[in-house]
Length: 90
Image (tube, rainbow, N blue to C red; front, side, top):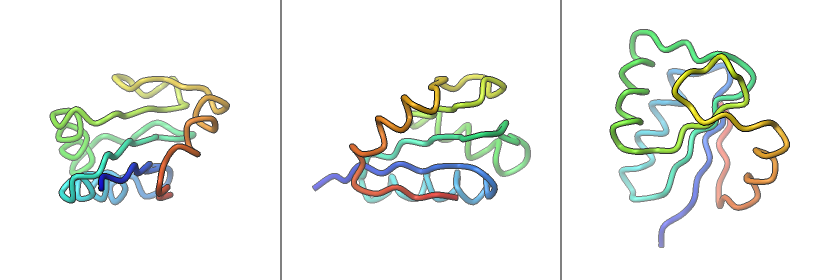
């Protein structure tokens, strides 16, 4: 049975993006939320971000500085989180 997983990205951005990609290998639905800061998309993080987009994964953010991501205010994100089976914070 497919699980719904939310990955909350804050400090450990590279690790969070890498883990998000790994989670789709077990055929779960994974959504990524970049919270409270601009994503530092350089090096490995840039490669992971590009792969997430190629896999059509949902990438959302509460920071308007993040380009190419769906912006959601904090209260909208809070309303969405209870629908997930697992929430992983990085």
